[in-house]
Structures are given as C-alpha cells and as structure tokens.
Length: 440
Image (cartoon, rainbow, N blue to C red):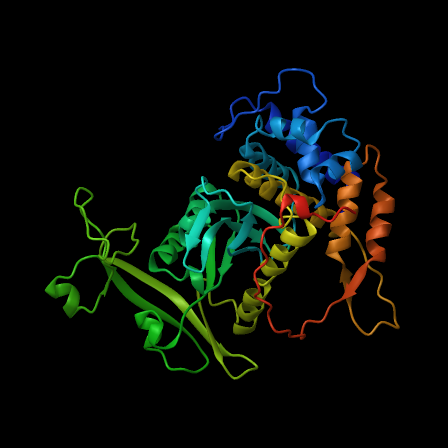
C-alpha cells in the first residue's frame, strides 16, 4: 500500500500544535527561567517562539523588520528573558511525537550520536567560558550532543553542556535514561564513545542495539587487541570486575578502577573509571573488522544479531556520517554561527530552535519527489540549504502555499556523488560579533 503524502501545511499545523502544547502546559518542568507572558503585548509567547524559529543570520533590527515585527531589539531581548529554553526543548519533543517519521532499516530506527561545539559571544562570567595558554583572552562555547535519526534526517533530542565540562559519554548516558525506546533502535557512534560502561548500559537497555567504532592495535580494548589484524566477524566474551583479588587475576578478569568509597577524598591523580553495574559482570558483543579502500582496517563493536551481514553493518555505519552533514546545516543554513543572544540560556533557545526548524524542513523535503531525467548522469537530491531557506519563508507566511513550496524545493537540487572524497576541512570558525553581521 502506498504511503500517503503529508502536505507542508499539515506539517506546519503539527508544529503549531507542538508550540501551543508546550506554552500551555502548566505541569511542565521549568528551567532557570519561566515564561510570564500575562499581558497582551506585541511580543506574545507564540510570537517570540515564531521569531526564534524563523530568524536568519542578519542583525536583530533587520530580522525584526523583515518579519514585520513592530518592536525594537531591546524589547525583544527583554521578552527573551521571560521564556525558558526548556519551552523549545518541549516543542521539539512534542513535534517529534506528533509527526510519525516512518523510515526504518530492517525494523530498526537508526540514531547517530556525536558532539559539536557552538561558539558564543565572549562572557567571562559564564560557565561556558574557556581559557588556556593558546587563547589567554578566553572564549565561550557550548557542547551539543544530539541523537540524530539518519534515515529521516531529524533530531530526536540533545544534551547541552558547557564546553569546559563536556562529557559526550555522560551525555549519551543521560539520553539513554531520558528517552523511552519503545521500538527497536540502533545507536551508531564513532571512537569517542568507546566505553565498557556505555556498552553495558546499551546492552541492558531494552529495544536498543549499538554499532560503535573502536580503537585497534595497542590502544584497543584488551580482548579486541588480541584479535588478528585481518577482516573478521567474531564474538568476544569477558568479565569486568572492580576488584583485584587473586581469584580475579587468576581468571583474567578485566579490571576497572573506581572510587568505591564516597566519603573518602581521593588524590586528583587517582585513576578512576566510570562503572555503574555489579562486579563481576559478564559482557559479550560482536566485533567486526573490514578493510577500507585505503588498505587500512576499521573495527566496529556491535550488539546486532548475526542476521546482519558484514555489508549491512558497513552500510549502517557509513550512514552515521549523515550527522556530520546535519551539523553543517545546523550551523550554516540554520544560523548557529550567527547567534542573536549572549547568555547561555539564550543560546540554548537558539540551538533547540535550529533543531526544530531542521526537523520541519527535513519533513517537508522528504515529501518532495524528484523526477529523474534520462539525460542526467547522476541521481539528484534536494539542496537542503535552499530547502531550509524556503521552509523558513513558508513558516513565516500567514497563508503559505504548500504546493508551490514543494515545486520550489524541487527546482533546487544537487547531484549525489557517493564515492566522492574530499579532504576534510577542520579549520575552526569563531563567533561572528553582533556588530559585524552581513546587512543584506
């Protein structure tokens, strides 16, 4: 049976409903701020949310003028203080629960996790302020760790930490605890998430499997280090312990040192690992190693059943790179390099707003059908930069034409080049000051 297409107007209606539910929810958990929109003003709670969802990267005065908002930027900033960033967090949750993202891989929802930094205006009083020998003046950053649905191209949720206290594994543990995984879910991640404790949490979590790239060679986990450096697909079994008795050593258990006594003050140099389970603890997972085109090997740890072949596992891990593209869109197409707030809570508002608008744009773009021309050499896909721009414009309009939006998005395409390899540009981009925004 063919899947019924969802119109842009329907998706916009779903987002509007998500906004209304969040604003009117009197039982919600409040953040450090609470919204107190009790008087009838130009900048109502709904209007503030709409502005922050659809704002572009220009100066604040210009953006308010473009949106036809009869308020000065000083009034806008004052009203921002009255609305918690957790309102946007709840809007994201509501929007995801209202809209049914349908793409699955062999019954699994495929979620990628990774971290990215968001540069902010310098504020030495903030917990996000960093300072070291290389940057004596210091700078501010927030670290964002999202769960991203790579098949539907939508953000499920995220955890935001001050960069000086960033902990990606801890962020994923938080997201595992927070999210109710009602359907089969695969979480994919790169080497920064390699952890016995995290693997155990994923193995214990119902309906959840993992596919995580791990180190190889001398720095690898002990049982993985023992494996031959060749293509393989095998299962390893071992036991974790937090004690070092003679029996533990004789049985060759893997020892994790922990700070067992909560009342004791440990030396800062005391090595301590994160472990949340009983000791001893048996662990078992699958290790897959394959050769890349470069001749190098890549090693993955996974809890996927043997019914997943080596080629399917490679395809699933490769799909993880969709989160890297999503980060680029989040920063450049959705404006996180041109923030309009200085305070951490204001920046959190804009991070969640960007993710909401990313989901809004992706859900509309996913409905666009591109007709393949016989003369085309490549397969073409929607140009998401233009799609985001058009979707923001559609969201701003009181009576947007959904059919015209679909036609407009279909005009802007780019070729799919799956085998294209470019050298990665890792040059960092600093925060763009409020007085140096492009005026047009």
